[in-house]
Each structure stands twice: as C-alpha cells, then as structure tokens.
Length: 479
Image 1 (cartoon, rainbow, N blue to C red):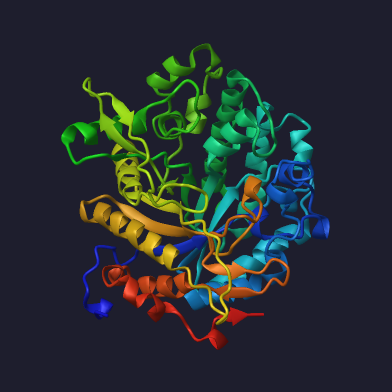
Image 2 (image 1 turned 60 degrees about the vertical axis):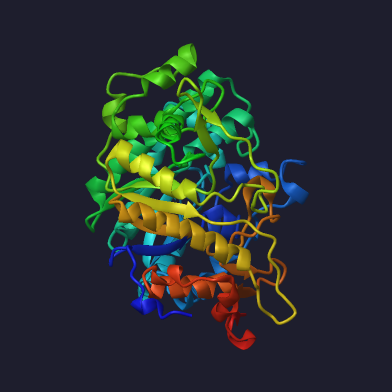
C-alpha cells in the first residue's frame, strides 16, 4: 500500500470528520427517569407499522452505555459526533416543567465527548416529537413553532457553554412528507396536501424561531445550520445538456411529491417559496402570514444535507430532465438504494451554488446486513468501497472550489431504522441487540485511517488491501 501521508488530499486541514446518530434510534430508556412518550413510542405500538414489530424501547441502550460508545468514537478517531436531543426526555409534556434527569443525560454526554476531544454537534429535532403535544395538534398547531423555540432555549441554556455547532431540524421532507402525508412514519397521518404543507410551514417557522433563540442565548459563539434531505441527481452523460437537466431536476417541485430541495430550502435562505412550487401545489400551498418569512429566513453558518443516493438524469429533446431507469443488476444497498457516489458531488454542488453557503454533509452511509464472522470480526468491505467512492466524489467537489466543511457518516452504531426496525445496519460499530455487545467493523478502522490522513488514504484504497483495516479480534470489541 502507498504511504497515504505522502498522498495529496484536497480536504482542508480543518475539515470536520464525524459520525452521527439520533436519539430515538440509539438511546432506548424510553420511559426512564421521567421521560415522556414521543410520537415514535406510540407509533411503534401499532401492529403492522414496523418491520417484525420492532421498537426503540431499548435500541442500543446508549442512554446507559454512552461512555462506552464515546470511547469507541475516540478509538475510531472521530473529530465530531452529531447527536440529537429527545424533546420529550427534556420536556416530558413538550412544554412546561423541565425533566432535570433527562437534561442531565445530555450534559453528561457532552462532557464525555469533550473529554475525548470530540466536538458535539447538536441536532434539536430528529423526529421524536412529544406525544403530549401531538394530542394538541402537533406540527399543525399554530403554537408549535413557539413550543419548539421554548424547548430550544432549555437545551441551549444547558449546553451552549460547550456546544457551538447547532442543527435545528432533520429532514422535514421525511417527518412531514412521510409522517404526515404518506403515513409510513410517525405520527402516521394521511393528510391532504394542504394540511401537509401547513405542517411543513410551521416547521419552517420553528426552524427560524429556534435559530433566533440559539443566537440570542448561546454562551459560545454559535454556528447554526439545518439538515434537510439533499434531493440529489446526477447526469447520465457528461454532456452539457444532461448537466443542465440535472440541475433543473434538483430545482424542481412536483405537485405529487414533497421530496425536493427548493420548497424547503428557499424559504430558509431566500425568505420565499419558489414560484415553481407555488404553481405545482396551487391552492394547497400554505397560508403565509405577514412576517412569517422574516422569521423563517435567518442567517445560517452552514447548509446541511443528507445524501445517500440519486437517479441519473438525461435531457429530453426539449431539454427537460428525464429520469434514466436503473440499469439491470446495478449495485444497491440492503435498502435497495442504488449506489451512486456521483450524487454526493452533484447534490453538494447544486446546494452550494444555489444557496451560497458552506456545505456540511450531515448524513451519508450504506445499509447492509452485517454480522460478526467466525473470527470475531465484521468484514464490511462493501461499506468501505461505498464510502471510499462517495468521499472521492466529495473531494472532487472540494477540488472545484465548493466550500464543504464537514462529513458525518451515518451512523456510528447499528440502530433502529424507523419503519424498517432492525432490518438494516448502517453503523461503523456492530451492535448485538440482545447482548448489547459492540464490535468495531472493518469500516471503522478504515475510517480511522481516512481521518488520520485527512482523506489522503482514499487514494490508496484497493480491494486487495481491505483487511489491512482489520484489527486483531482481541482488540476490536467492547463489553
């Protein structure tokens, strides 16, 4: 293998190499120490909603094992960990009296991260909405943005003396579009488009109020962003027509779909809904009150994006974008998402050029069906190859001058994958859900090398060297 320290890397010296997880997916302790129920606690009680009837009541037991998990993060060499706070753990009824024991958990977790020289990046909402507030109307309630702002202040008052990086919302396209429109996620609603978009509008107001709250109350100078889906595409060929069609596809808003960039991003950055979206949604567009966009549009320090895959686009004779069918036998993840590393390049390029903000890849990773081999290791060569391809494409964007500040691999631990239960394993760390035994996968050691070399080792990768990233079985597990 080449000496990666001698291999040039386009990644900037202060690039943030991290990994991510979400509270409901890893914490467990669903009713411990005064925590209130979330919409996901209730949704998983419904028969047939989750694969094999799984739930997050125990998950990875991170609530009790956080110190062990931070030690594993340190072993991997993470520079940052993107965590999310459970709103009903901090405020059991969503508003009112603070649950001190619940808030203290995040206080201890942040201290543990700081002691390990891992920067905490805090996401305020990753889908576990308080059930008590759902009964009061949820995101459709006019007061929901204020509820979120009040909750934000509680967290900021507690953690902002050590936390400087804040993310308001994670993927409104999903918790609104899939949770309120399609009904496949909590709270499991099948609302008409008008109500779905109104709930979405309220979440954008919540983002704006939260951003204001962070800046008004933070002890450390805050850096504020958010983490929507990066609805990415890539050109079928390198022709200018296909490139232009790809950019057009990433700008589009369709009347039957909430999975897009502009409807969500434009209000946050530009202070208005895109005209294409207003035309697509028509009378279903939300009612905007005077002053709403002044709240929604707040200064951002970075634009987060969660990108895993995206379709190829080609230009029709009239130049309009046309999706190219997936090739027979194309590589795909266990989730059946096509492996398309180009999507990370094109998605980050589109968002950077449209919104003129630094980009942080807040999620990217591969779902697999990983298991511990007879030798005690987890040989996930597919994940190593996947991540290497995607990170090389991200480096391409950096070489072309796109301002990309950080990358968070999803996820640090195998965990509860929402409606899919425990079917999928995204983690750098294998979790035995019965025993709670953690095992660092080969990809964890590979990622450590990437971090140590600041991306230079990406150019050394070859399948013949995969097992160079394995460690002796006696050193790769924790109990």
